[in-house]
Amino acid sequence: MKKLFATSLIALGLATSSLSSLTVEVNGSYDYFRGIPEGSWNGNQGAVAGVNAGMDLFGYACGQLGGSFGLYNWDGRGNLAFKNPKALEQQAFLTAGISSSYCQWNFGVAYDHQFVKHFSVYDVSLSFGQIRFQGGYQFCQDEVGLWGTAHMDKARKHIEGVSVSYRAISQLSGYWTHYFSNYAESTLWLGAPYQDSLRFSNRTAGQFVAGFALRAPLADRLYFDGHGSYMRARTSSGDSQSRNYAANVCVGITYVFGDCCNRASYMPLANNSNFLVDTSANQ
Image 1 (cartoon, rainbow, N blue to C red):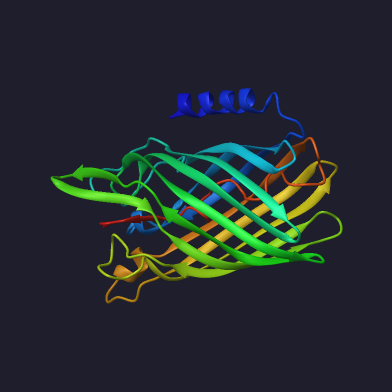
Image 2: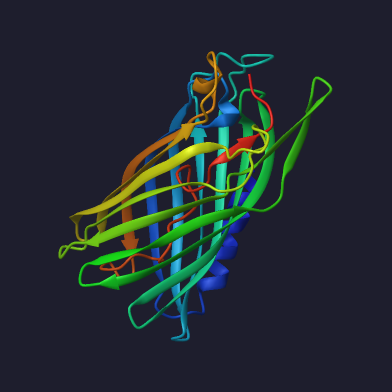
């Protein structure tokens, strides 16, 4: 995974070296997340480093390419189904996207791919992707619109003779973004999964999804960034409901190379707030 991530960053540099209006953001963050694959495990916490590059595509659109890599559970994990490894959980996201504007309308689409090792209560390594889309209407210092995801491929693992599947959760949310005069911004969203879950027959993975993102300037080119989300679990009896919710909180610092007054891209990198994971089984 580390070699793949390094190769992707090199490709990022080569792909953007000949394009104009390049803006690059480098971020370091603390991240906590959990989801349906964690089962009875209470979650994962660690450090994440990311790079996001945005560039003007000949005046017609804006391109985006970036990724992040995180190391979690530095003191090991308990409450796993079969063992308690000391190996760090590794997670990487890659995002490639394109966006444009017309009058006061903004819209974009991106492909996200997630790579994980020592993941979930079953301690598996796998990868899978999703399509993410966003469109909104901007007026004065506000933007309102819709964003969502659609799962792509499915990853399967055989655990003790049983096939367990993983994939992204397809979700759709309405959002409101406010842009402040000092280049700070805040976003709130509320929505729900919209396709049948792997975990629940003929039902979605959760009841609703809510989240936030914020950015505040600390100095020239230096920003505080944060985001978080929560997916309400399906109602069920016993303690199984407590195994099937999702949550994420991430806070960090971002340094901007290039146009320090604007984001590198219209859409953020894939992260544990906008890339939720479903599974067919947990413990």
